[in-house]
Length: 233
Image 1 (cartoon, helix red, strand yellow):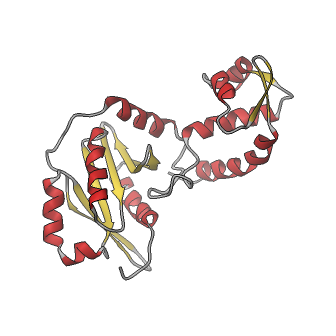
Image 2 (cartoon, one colour):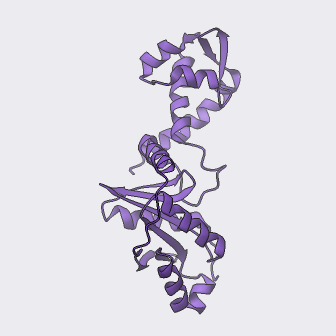
Image 3 (cartoon, rainbow, N blue to C red):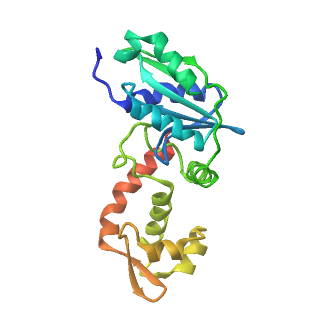
């Protein structure tokens, strides 16, 4: 490739493209690089710098979640430059769509090479509902598609834990039921008990306080969440 880029560099051009078509777009939802939704239409897009069998297998697997699945690659992709006709034919035979992103210094261009065809295997309803739930519950678009799992830490679950930690910072301690009512978080007691991020201490049965780790980490995560909420999606 002529220019060193990352998978996540493909994200914003595609997001702007789909947003202009009326889609709500978010990155890194349940391991899908991009999820776009408009009314009853759900699109999944997998980002890769190069075409390989792993990408194709991953993209085909996404049909268990959505009827419309695209692969997005940079225009500089070596295999596409050498064999564009063969690549388009292969992807079409798999029922996938293909998007090419031309990344230049001043401008990025998105071109839909082909739309998905009529390949519609059986959906995994449980996984699809988990995908839609995370999409709906996540505040803002917190991650660029193509980010690593480590980078993509501001999930809907963490955002809910942040709200609980914020409340506990203002109290000496509190019962789970009190937290539930105060911040309208129906699973507050369960989340406090699970203590997934080690942000809470159990003072006694049913009563919790924020831990030292929670106090130390909360400002960083609040800053990340505030940036997301203050930036138009």
